Length: 304
Image (tube, rainbow, N blue to C red; front, top):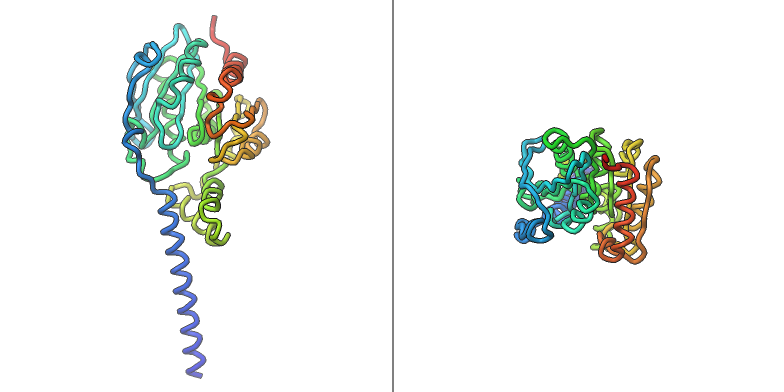
């Protein structure tokens, strides 16, 4: 009957329109999540290791896998064949690890401080949030530069937040990376986007949040790509040090335990009571130095 067909048609059309609206709203919401306005302040490198800390350094640049030019500083150490790559977090630059670089250099280790793509003086606009999806390739390029151009035999990557996630993913993929120090790493882009969205908009339904998260990760280029929690097992038998503050309000403090559970030996963990996001050094300077330097000297002693 014609009226039945008409009702069915309009019902299907209404469902299709609702689905399109739902999808469109989720796509719009994902854009709000992953689009950022890079700060000019974080694009400016104000100072250097010599003026700030009295450390000799060299300006360096090297290419990432996709041709982006990455820029940073190399701090040589006398006769050191072990180097640490510092990997800053989202919206920061190489200066984030300036004090850690002095700590590492004072212990005798060479240090490479560099800006990930879209940050500092490195190529890339930084308009789209990546959460390590692309940045881990920058970390791999930094490690390759040290071994190829600086005669470094062993490379440890040391990151916080997005830098920590990038370090874990890089080491899982690149066997030329010899160890990882990671503070406040996310378990996966999908999980942290879900957590952040639920915090910002608790009124949104779980189905809509799930759709928006899926679209966000897809637009970031990470669909089908495993996160740190999925690949951390692949780092063994190379050592991993995981750290996080118990009062972290950006990355759930439980994430570090999840990563530790999935990691294989050799592994170690330190949770700083009451420390916020990437604030372990500020709150516990002595303990921070002890955990980091003890890890390095135990697994990567310097040649005599």
